[in-house]
Image (cartoon, rainbow, N blue to C red; front, side, top):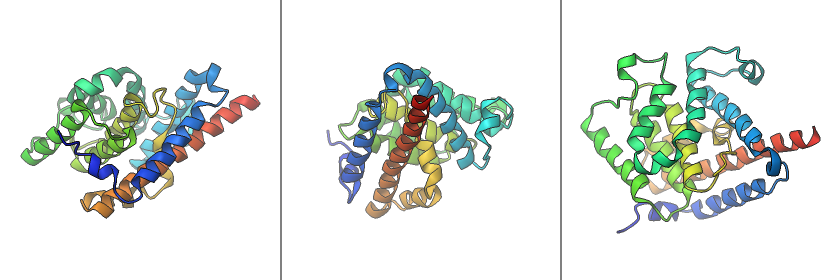
Length: 244
């Protein structure tokens, strides 16, 4: 069977960008702080990643009050809950992605959408067909790098408007989940959301929606850079912990 992502993975500049991101993650994983404090670092990056995801959805809050539990905005709280679910949903992602997406939406959109709509995709034939294709990519496996799959998962969910609320938060959580479950970032240490926030996220996503090789390649290179910037954030966290 032909791997549908194989062509995408070889678009101009993509192999090099993906390899650079992989090397950055590998360097991070060798940091001495992670030998003893990996769970602590992961928890901190989850918090910062959730804050960045909420900011990308239009609600930008400071980290200090967020860490203190003083922010009750539903978008922010939804991003925090979605981030927390990543560690619990990994094994299910490969076998039952629809179930995982429903769960991510249920926690991300709580307080933003009617209870009856939580976890329920919009009823649309074209949407259902495209979702079927995405589910197939996840469940049948691919030999392309995890970053390529994660980038496509993120973009598809973001542009499909699958649920009608909190789709961006769900898409970014699904990207992180893919990076974790498919082996690039198994300890969930890289807050790619921070990278997306630092870059021109909207323009890169718009490039993907063109469906052209150039547009798709632009998005994949953007996602690779987002991972690299996430690595820088985590490295800074590790260095701060090392200094005490």
